[in-house]
Amino acid sequence: MLSVIGNIVSCLSTGSSDGGAHPSNWAEYHTVELGKATLMVDPHVEVKLTSIFPEDLLFKALKATELIRDHLRNRRPANLSQLIHSLQDSCEVSFTSLLTSWCIYDIGKDSVTIRFGLGSGYEQCRGNFTEFDISLPIPAAHRAYFQEALKNGTFSKNSCGLR
Image 1 (spheres, rainbow, N blue to C red):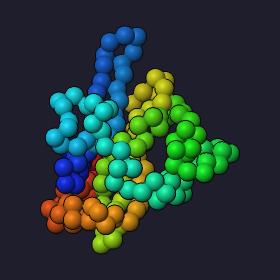
Image 2 (tube, one colour; image 1 turned 90 degrees about the vertical axis):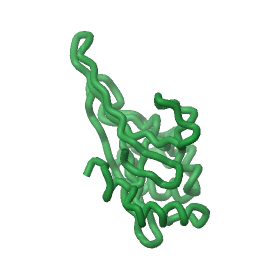
Image 3 (spheres, helix red, strand yellow; image 1 turned 120 degrees about the vertical axis):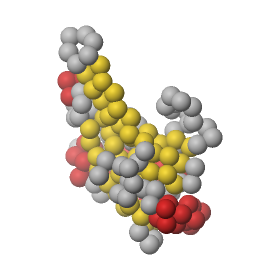
């Protein structure tokens, strides 16, 4: 488990396979809402960041990261939807699950650090795992959940996360 904010839980999903011509392994963050989750990760219950944070703030924060800028190349999306559709997977990273592959890494007084955990884009780079962070203001509608997580230390920097 990486973080718990209210009934939203983020975890690291990993796996490996020894079958076929060569071994394979993978890793990715998944975020689900308790009460809707099943034992297996189901994309229909994964929580998109847009259900918590405004799209315009996500767009601005994502566009400012070096990783996203590098993968946009010369494209200039005007909004979050265009940004998501403009990102091109590379061998090293897949952006397919960008809005659902996240956890809360740190919580400040008025802001939160979101860490993304994305798997590789192609089999040749199997095992690659890319992490990057953005910072966003805590939404007023969810402030109580973030304050509770801060009090309980149920976010990745302080809990059983990767660090």
